[in-house]
Length: 292
Ligand code: NAP
Image 1 (cartoon, rainbow, N blue to C red):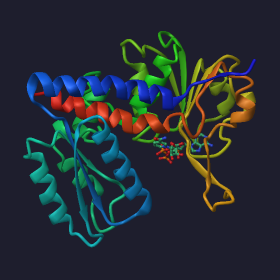
Image 2 (spheres, protein in one colour):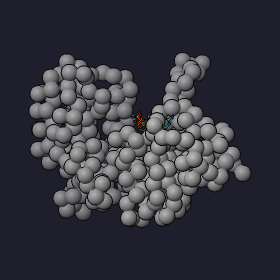
Image 3 (spheres, helix red, strand yellow):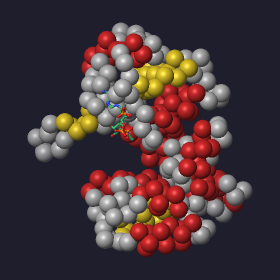
């Protein structure tokens, strides 16, 4: 039987509708308008399109969107000064410094300068620590989106075998930690695979839930998947070019073959992708509510 497709687009829209109501209520009852400030250094086209999308998404929900665009040659000190100003600006509840930064700027120094209470990306070590001990304030956006997709698709997590392929700090490690927590929507038995894993199919075939964040096309093929499993494909790989000159996006999972084995599966595009900005909005609303 062909797998049910989990539409990240639909789930993201449902969450944005819920957030829209929260934003309206915050305004009505407390006069608070959640505000996200994005900071872009340089003109990397992908980064420009990401921050534009983030700003638009904020405005659509009735949130404030602030944006600082700095030239590529901006010095580290100037960027740190701006972060400090934003930390002290009461209208700004969330700060997002778009990565990657130009090579002459120490990325960690900048990310660690963001007030952890405004770190809506969840990358500050204080927020990573909170996540690990199960007292998360801002779960990182992509892993948070993955967990929402699992829960809202009706996939049971309690006691489930969750297998994560990939151990990056932004996807693999945090989603593994989140699924391990003694909480609703988690409480799973978690295995993490990476490039040094011996005999990966032995592990992946045990997964009731298989989360793939390897950044490699076809890293997971049909024979590596347990029949009926829920498969979340985080990967984004650009292949070939369409007639209009645009690259085609594919995930890390051999979608056509795996959908004949899995019970549920996310597509690429339209799966995890639309969830990431949505969770950023959610974290910003959470930040705005903290003072209540
Ligand atoms: P990353 O930093 O490159 O990490 C990839 C991880 O996968 C590493 O831990 C690596 O192992 C492991 N890996 C690579 N090939 C493997 C293989 N064949 N078998 C087993 N493990 C393998 O990547 P990332 O930042 O986590 O991103 C992963 C993918 O998700 C990328 O395609 C990225 O574009 C996508 N992504 C999408 C979103 C979204 O919003 N949709 C957000 C973030 C990332 P080692 O540690 O041993 O090297």
